[in-house]
Amino acid sequence: MEIDIRKRKIGLNFNEYGVAEIWLWAPLAAQVSILTEARELTLSLFDEGYGYWHLQTDQISKHDKYRFKITPLTGGEPLERADPASLFQKEGPSGPSTAFDVNAFSWTDADWKGVALNDLVIYELHTGTFTSNGDFDAIEAKLDYLIELGITAIEIMPVAQFSGSRNWGYDGVFPFAVQNTYGGPSSLQHLVNACHAKGLAVILDVVYNHVGPEGNYFSDFGEYFTDKYHTPWGKAINFDDAGCDAVRSFFIENALMWFRDFHIDALRLDAVHAIKDFSPAHILSEIKAHTDKLSEISGRPYQLIVELDLNDERYIRSQSEYGYGMDAQWVDEFHHALRVCTGQAREGYYSDFNGVSDLAKSYKDAYVYTGQYSPHRQRNFGMPLQQSSGAKFIVFSQNHDQVGNRMLGERSSNLVSFEMLKVMAGAVFCSPFLPLVFMGEEWAETNPFQFFVSHSDEELIEAVRKGRKGEFAAFHTYGETPDPQAEATFERSKLNWAKIGEPGHKTMLHYYQTLIALRKQNPVLANLDRENVQTESFPEKNCLLLKRWKANGEILVGLNFSKQMQSLSIDPAFQHASVLLDSSLTQWNGPNPESNPIMAEGQLNLFPESILILYKADA
Image (cartoon, rainbow, N blue to C red; front, side):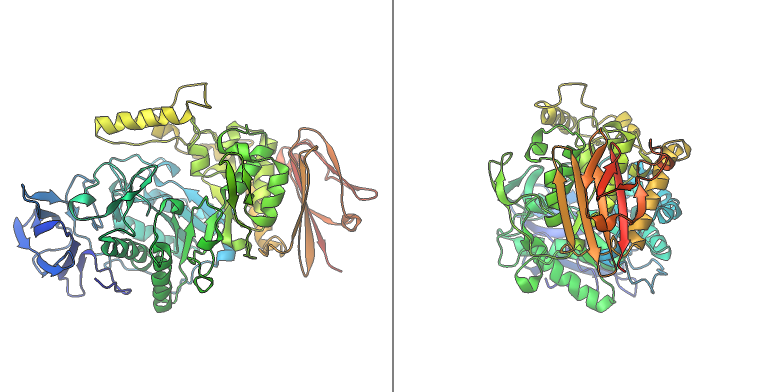
């Protein structure tokens, strides 16, 4: 079935006359009917070939509850299943689908042109734990706070319908349906419209590498999965095996829907290294091509951001250069190197990193591993980059994975000192890359962010518990693994907004506001050209110098990760440079009553666990 860029064709949709049009891919069915609850109707769908079934009818209205009745080709009793492309599972995955008109919302963002990639300051949040209410309406109430902080885009962790009310979102089983407990599809549209009215872009996390376990009935319809490959989270989605054409269309339709019908500005595609596709045109490349066509029609830019751990530039290379054309990627290696600088134990995947020397390399090359031997992987890993734009890379000192995948879900505020938190934040915002803040980080939130689920199948619940314990058996020998199913685990993970007004937390929030403002306002910090970067590391002192420049000035950043005062030799030209920020000052609860002077003959003194940002304008 050919994809129509201008409208969603898969699932149940209403045309401009209020008539329902239904398309279902079910090649494993001998017959397909649609059942409606309120009207007690059974309507037969027509076989259109290639596994597609179709019906156009005025006997289904908006908000009607419906299911499909499938008679298997192999015989046996008919199956009643919700729509795989359902927009709203009001009663959860096990309930009927609700007919929803995605075009009924009255948008007021006609003049919205988006936020340029270079200008993104991203705030990652989880809808259920960002506020006490845990829904889209509650996020909307915090938008003015985020604007005051300096954020230009919120990134919402996955909202595709999952089982229960508590989940990170990566176990979604209805990719088109918006989680019912968050408010459903109309509430998400309302939130996006409100964000645009206030100048905020919206990034949505989507999962195209697997489907969650509970409520997953895709295999009753067709060959959505393949046994050719496996993922850590279950069966691989079928992007290149028999029957894959319709599966590819299904996920292309999904990406287009978020942009076109929900006005989402960018998608963050989860763990694309787990997407296995050896087709001549990779599925990511096809999604990009269709996204670009939609952008031409709408006049709005849409961005595709990937989580990727392969250090493979092919993903972010343009399609004209035989790449997949993704607009940007997360760089975990910057985070790993930064963590080791702060004294994080070198275990697990941190064992590959050597602190300031690797952080210095990441400032220059984005990736730390660009083809050299990786002891953790026991092979050469990565490739050198040809990209010159730092806007292709997103960096962070924390994110949901790096916090939540610790056994106890400890945030940085529980692992390092207050002074070191300031250094970590400065390291991110002084980079030539796009910065991301994980919710609550900006006020040094101490509540953990732990892994949580709310499944109903006891065997699945026990399997998740055992899997979680097994994950940490080798390197976490203290404490008990929090029970992912327990509601208390979820409640512990909610932000405590009352902390904002408390001493220390209030100071950290102001520090983040200052950093973000500097990032936006200083022409050198705002410039994301990776070519204009020099670094010098001092492993014996656990210090690093970062130099960045543009035609109208230069920035010098001194980072001291050690617990001792350190003196570093710098270019004497910075002797009379302006101090943009000094984290050691008492203003930021530091030990230093006065800004660090640059000593004679170009010696720079750095207080323990501090960052100093100097700016020299060209004469």
